[in-house]
Image 1 (tube, rainbow, N blue to C red):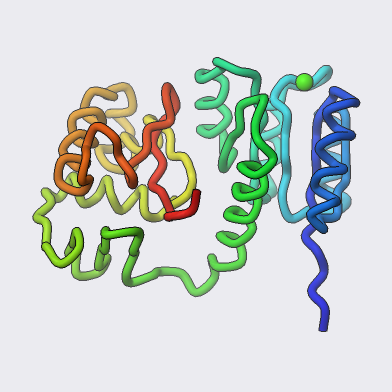
Image 2: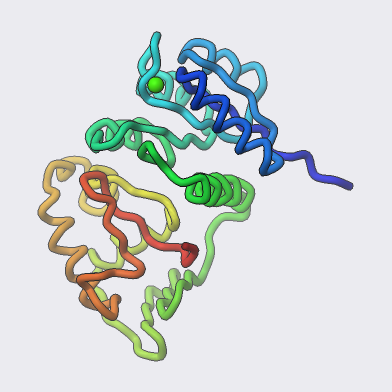
Amino acid sequence: MKAINPLLLLVEDDPQFQMLLSTTLESQDYRVLTAATGQDGLITARNHQPNLLILDLGLPDIDGQEVIRRLRKWSDLPIIVLSARNQESEITQALDNGADDYLTKPFSTAVLMSRIKALLRRVTKMPGGTQEIFQVGELKIELTKRRVFVGEQEVNLTPIEFNLLCVLIRHAGFVVTHRQLLEKVWGPSYVEHSHYLRIYMGQLRHKLEADPARPRYLLTEAGVGYRLSEGEN
Ligand code: CA
């Protein structure tokens, strides 16, 4: 039995870019729906139940942020937002509103394709739940035993370091914002304390990375948050 190709919804108001992107996606065997306004995007999402949404944040009618907020009231559809360059605060807000990942224009098609694949894979792998071992490169984490290894060497982490690593593992391959990390590890009243994050991320890198200044696993998304590499790219 042949699997049905995933259905993607692209909400983008620039007609040339919309055309270019939908042609590219179709060439990769995705089925593509398009909308040029936020309102039309929301209606199309409701009527067609796509597998993934690619959302430009700058739209002519309702703001992309508002599209995410309205959509998240009834849907957990994976969302990748597209943003203009140097709009970190906008990206952070979109992620905190419930978007799953982002790309800054201009972006490479290869990166977009790998993000789409990763998100679709995460959705299909979600039921069944908790994994026992997370592994990438030399790094191995036994989650229920709370043990961490770099190669053969066991590494001791403090409880906060371990919890921070766990949040990143749960979102492996995806960006997690400063606010989300602070809230999940320290609690809701700590969301402004981003210096905690810098300190603990520095310690984690020191313990887990061969070269903490040029991390392979714990990647910085400048101005936005952190991403744990899944080993691809
Ligand atoms: Ca736009």
